[in-house]
Structures are given as structure tokens and as C-alpha cells.
Image 1: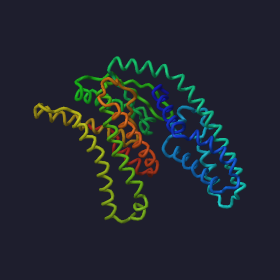
Image 2: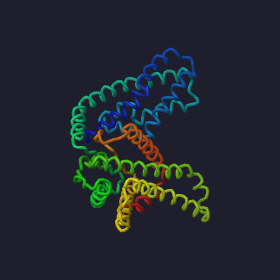
Image 3: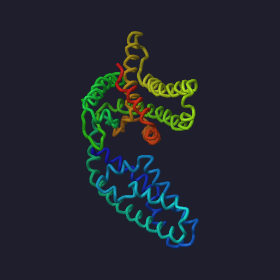
Image 4: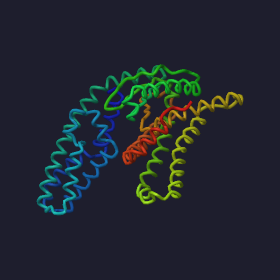
Length: 364
């Protein structure tokens, strides 16, 4: 695991456990439960809150993110799936008397509180260890005026087949110099594979800072569009099941979903056109630029639709006019990623395979 991934995982933990107040709440719950042995409303309210929190950790990928940090300790943390299973079983048992509920919720909250304290200590040690490396890397990039982008491949076709991965990398090797030249007239450094872990491949790219930031913006736009498609697909699962066999309605539904997928490419293409300066160029050169933008659009859209990611790892802050807006934009992209990841899990295998097949390669 590279230092940038570690840093991001630490930040996720702090946001979800420390800054959110969860660690403090767990400590308070220990006291409240001890004083509320006969109060069913208070006890069940605490049980419901904890269940919702642990379920969100699973659904939004927070648990998976922390597992990257603590692969050997995850079973003794609050993020393991069995903890959610325990609290769900407790809350869904209508036969349980208040005395039994009090005893079981006491045990669960006490254990979660202890695990949370221990996990925080482990996270703090990791943060202390990586801080010098994060600082030295940031300083080096600040001096060079560069930005780092991480291409993350998660789809099984790419991560499990060397031939497929080679095609993907070759495609990006063609696209990145084209995109870099359109934005800055410079070519990027060669692609460097820095990490392979847990069924994913993490590829670090050292680019001109403007290229890195603009590429991350294209990715954000694609993710937003894909999240919209997935939200629609998920919300209409019952309708699709009900209309199965109704060819006329199915045609309409297929067209709607096709338009939502097309919108991903269209929105990325519109943004890419805004990023590239065409003023004063000849008609012939603009036509050539448009073809290049189509290739970039294909690369970004395909990458996202196959369930992969692009992350802006770091950048030279002196080149950024509005860093607050950039940080907010990256946060919005993360939120869209969480939504897309959650809804993607609900897709049937046939739809997933169809997406992988339809958006298999970068179009030239």
C-alpha cells in the first residue's frame, strides 16, 4: 500500500469516528446504558443509532477503507461485519425482554467502545509513522510544480487478466500525452505502477499540476453521471421486475437507461471542451482537437463505468487559484463515489457484465 492511500484511509477514519463524535458517543453510551436498565426507549434508541452507523459503514465502503489500514486487526475493530449482524439480531428480536436487551446491549456497547479505543491507538501510530513521508513528498511536489494522480483499477477483468491490464495501460499511455498536450503543450512522465493490493491495481501518474487537476475534474463529472444512472437503475428494480415480458415498455426503459449512460460521455466531453482552449485555432486543427477529446472522453467514461477510480493524490498548491473550491469538488466526487459504489453492488450480474462488455476498451 502506498503512502497516499494510507493517508486517505487515516483521514477517513478520523472523519467517520473521531470528528463525527462516534468515539465520544460510545463512551457516553456506556454510562447512559448503566443508568437506564429499565428504560426500554433509551436502550432501544441507542441500539438503533449504533445499527444505523455500522450499516452505513458497510454500505458506504468505510469498513472496506479501514480494512486497508488494519488488514490483520480488522476482526478486532468496530468495522467487522459480524458487529453489525449482532446488533441487527438484537434489535430485530421482538420476543426479547427489557432485562435481556439491557444485558446484551451493555455487552455490545462495552465491546465496541473498547475496540474503538484500541483502533484509534493503532490509527494514531500509523499516522505518526507515515507523516514524515507525506511531508517530504508534498515538499518535493511543491518545488516541482507537479500533481499526482492515482489510476485505480478494480474491475475483475482488468485486475485478473494480464492481457486486459496491458490493454488498459497502453490505452492510457496514448491518451495522457494527448490530454497533456491539449491542456499545457507538455508530455507527462511515464506511467509507474506503485501498488497491487486486495484485487485492485493502483497506478501513480506524475503530471503537470494543471493536467492532474483537470483530469480529476473530468473523473468527477463522469462519476456524477454514473451515480445518476445507478440511482435510477436501483430505484426502478421493482418496476423492471414487474414489466418483464412487456416488450414495448422494456424498449422505452432500455432507451432511458441508454440515454443516462450516454449522458456520462456527453457531460465529460462538454467539460473537456471547456478545458481546452480553441480560440484562434484553424478549423482543421479544431477538428483534430475534437477527435482527441473524443478519445479522452472514452477513456475517462469507460474507466468509471467499469467501477474504477481516479484520485487526485497531491498537487502544487501555488498553482491553484481557489483551493477551497478544489477541496470541495474532490469531496463531492467522493460522495458520488460512495453513492455509485453502494448502488453498483445492487446491480444484477447480467447488467454488470453488459457494462463491462460495452465499455471494454478506449475508443480511438
